[in-house]
Length: 303
Image (cartoon, rainbow, N blue to C red; front, side):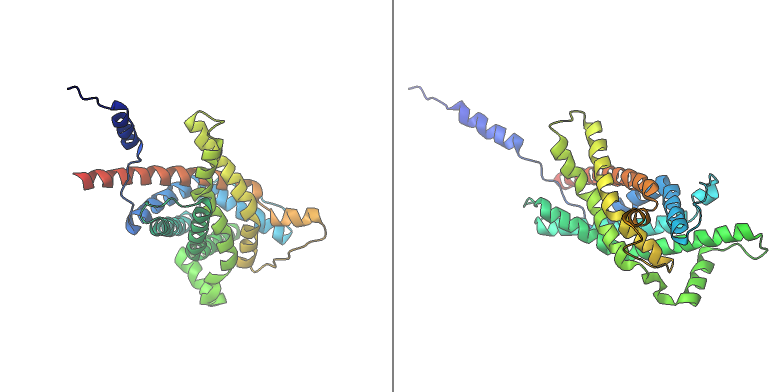
């Protein structure tokens, strides 16, 4: 008696098994924090000059004085680096930790696929909470930079201002609550920025995939597009934050529409550059490090 074997069912079963995505071990809070710190250091190293230039332009326009020429002196271009780096590292660590934690919880460690709306809400929440660290660090950086400029222009024989002396003078003049200045505006800005580098690149990548075949070009295009969108919607809040931290009014409407737009989008060019490059740096760094770390953990667990 001959027995027939239906090989099509076997082939179908094997194919389905091969097509199932490999489940990788999620990162812990600590591991996500390390990824965020590395991404933060990378971004600040590349973009500190642009961050300083944005604030110079915003403050000059708000004070009604000519915008100063771009300084190519490395000490001035990277002034405030340590304060900004420590702040950004804390911010990105918190943002990546909260984003990873919420995604793991809501997706049951990857068992459930999150909707785009859920991913966007998670990223925005992570950005808003990260602003608790961004707000005071940016304030200290701005005040330190201003103190350094005044020191160099005055030819003073007094000791050069340090971060500790800047912080001390801020607290003496305005009290400990000075570090909360502009917090709401910073939260609104960073909610949009975090959505820009956590959610938008992947979303746009999927939408553009049928039209762009080169993976490198697709990644750059999706990140740059996300950065432009993010910069446009978040910049007025960044301007409002800068005004609040420098004790300037946040008048919503000016003499005409042109002046209103010019005021709210002061320094948009340098900040757009920083946001676009920042989204690219953050997105690629975080995605790459997270992927490598997840694969490593999965391999270790299988051994």
